[in-house]
Amino acid sequence: MKALFEKVKLNEKIELRNRFVMAPMTTYSGNEDDTVSDEEITYYKERASGAGMIITACAYVAANGKAFPGQIAAHEDHYIPSLQRIAQAIQQGGAKAVLQIHHGGRQSLQDLVPDGDVVSASTAITIEKNEARSLTLDETKQLIKAYGEATRRAIQAGFDGVEIHGANTYLIQQFFSAYTNKRNDEYGGTIDKRMRFPLEIVEEVLNVRNMYADDSFIVGYRFSPEEPEEDGITMDDTIVLVNELAKTELTYLHISLGDFRSETHRYEKGQQNRISAIQSLLDGRKPLIGVGSIYTVEEAEQALQLGADLVALGRALLIEPHWVEKVEKGEQVYTAYNENVDTVLPSPLLKRLKSRPGWVPGF
Image (cartoon, rainbow, N blue to C red; front, side):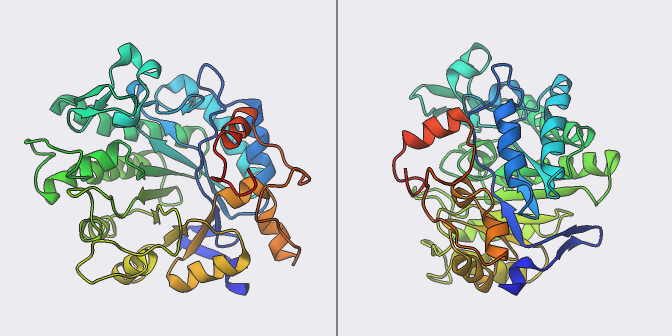
């Protein structure tokens, strides 16, 4: 357990008080104008005294990128005061505050984007079973700039960093995946062309970081390692992408998994733990955040042993907001939601959890 609570350096200028990260989780709880709600501020404050770093719910970077009701916005300057409230709420507890920046692509909701104009890497079916249109070349380049502008706003709002959301089938992954990218221009076709969009976003975000801050400002990247579709992402594809990401000035990489014990499905080196496979490639070049169904200290230790440098807690912190502090003190923690735990969850989030029995143990 000692290793989990030791201070850890992400680079020469960034030190976290422990190896725990609060994973980014959608709250569905923003105000109607897409600013942060008081309930969300309470939610972040309650969890900020334990983990070394908190990654926020995703903030959308362009008007046509909103994928959730109650999602916070980062696509215009007038949202900076809203973002500042979140950063300050987290930092007051001693955690590093990282804003996750995101575009839903074909996962965006038609009734939440201007004129119902949902876009993707290619023409595709949306989650509402309508058609998303293919982005033009000029629009693609504008969206790359949009991630940079959201980064500038995060810096001006006082955040300690941003995480580029390249996972969970949202826009960046839609460009990288041959399943959703059928383009025949410079952003589609070969894996090198499909990687171009994510890599240019990383370059843009880092350029903006260097313009308005320095390498004490964290820039992370989250990715999903595999897709189930026949022409979807394989672990071999991901190894190519991660190797390129490791060459950049990114501060960390964050693998998105439902279970940290999950193994590869399609990989030339055979079946093995996904965290271990990525760490074998990285070989210490970048810190790796591992995540997925970690509810106990024993599971957190297992994630470290598999190769994670940092351990992200998601649903465990919905169940026990002071999980980290309790574990450090040797106190028992719940592994399923219990109404007797003194916690406040934003009402829209609580309603969503109750509507999805089993997603969080105890509901």
